[in-house]
Length: 310
Image (cartoon, rainbow, N blue to C red; front, top):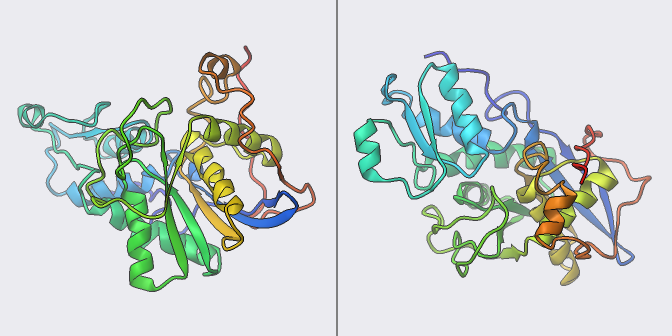
């Protein structure tokens, strides 16, 4: 079958990296942001989707198609790939997909949760790309967690290459992906109601953020740098601020921002939604300044979305 253009994975056009300056309580810190929203289908899950498709392409029934669970970002990417190959795709919002359902519809389940193609996409594509873009500098690298494939891929890349990186997971309160206590989760596209099969023993370090932290970080990031991000993207700089504040050892961090702001205009960027859920005035990024004369390492990016009026 003819494959559509690669969405930034193994192709000639990596996603952009920017480096806004940070001043935290009078101390300069270095923060790199890789903007996965610039993939053709809008998120880091483009890479996962392509790897999953490559893994199942020779086994899929063109009439039955694919079925996969999604909390938001994987669905559009897999749907676009399936459409390009004229294969039906069924998105299942609940991650606990029934085996009986899969049997009845004869659809093929790529299984992002346990398929080794998921972490491999990042061990062989995303992580080496970021390593080249940052010059191989020693740093911590933060990735958001849902199925765990991105974090597992970065862990595997570091183990195989010896890169001087400290991979860190960023999860949300209430997620059990890496062994956290189960609870209600407000934000979509981040965290999981099931333990990660590719990181069955969890991961250390992992930073758990409360809903107000990524929400405020999203707004502050857009205001100060023009970069729009969704809640999983906002959770990363929020976690980075925590790590910067706990000591002087970590002075350089990179965040793999999974998606953009276009899919959360009616939530994170809506004043009404924030007020409804009590996510206003949290001061999660208090004491942080972004110097206006600082240059961004890979050029400027278009401004994020405007706030949805109340």
